[in-house]
Image 1 (cartoon, one colour):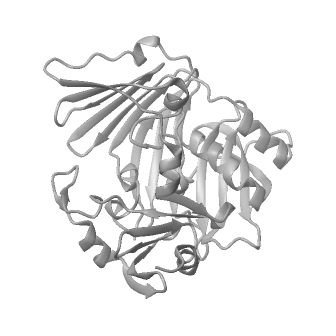
Image 2 (cartoon, helix red, strand yellow):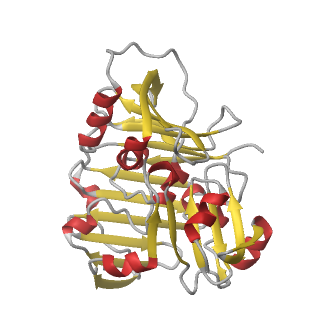
Length: 351
């Protein structure tokens, strides 16, 4: 099966990467000879990435999905089936993300403590006033918009449980980059062989990420810049005025109640073999209309693409991709991670 390739016009903007964020890691092909760069240690390169502030820039991001499953089945899968997205970042926390997806365009503008979200399909605009520490790094609805933010947060999560090395150089989006490689230590129970991060030699911004699995030399999932410009962005890019006739709503964002969230979900384990365990929202498995207007029946999809399983945890379905596994029980619990099925079973425990 050939990878599904989407060209996305984008610019780096801060975004949060959850556990499921591994689904956005990638490494597209590059051309030309490897550039000659000064030598650098793995630890120095990691530290420079973690301490570097995302600069002002814009560019084109290319996404390749070679999971072998329709993206509608996967958590956050819609981010893998974008037609196009253009993003701007001013280097000071303000950003703009325009997404083309099927017949609908969505624009998210983050300026200071205000986040506007506009959807062309129903001509609606929502203005949310968000506390500064919550608004920072969000692009709306959990969208992961670029390899830079994803790589930085991934490095912070798995560096202690990895063997980290610098393996040569590469040219990505026309820029010279170091190849940073993270390999799980032998004690880690994971489906992943390694993760590769191409780091810009000048700005220390991650330009490319790749999730590599066993049994193939090709990345299972890809996301990277195919062109990028580190240039100042005009302030006008981060101003938003709702189109004429748009239905506008306003709300004050609430600070997330971490105590409540911890009751709903928890992380079992650490590093590469960490597993997220929780409860599926009550309406998540109900039949609904998808963004393309087609009817979506999550339970039918589970039975179609999942494998029936049972054990001390009860019964349910398990879905396995090249980069991870998810188990959803019939009573609404779930476990997911970049791990084999047995690790999920152990994490769920008994019913």
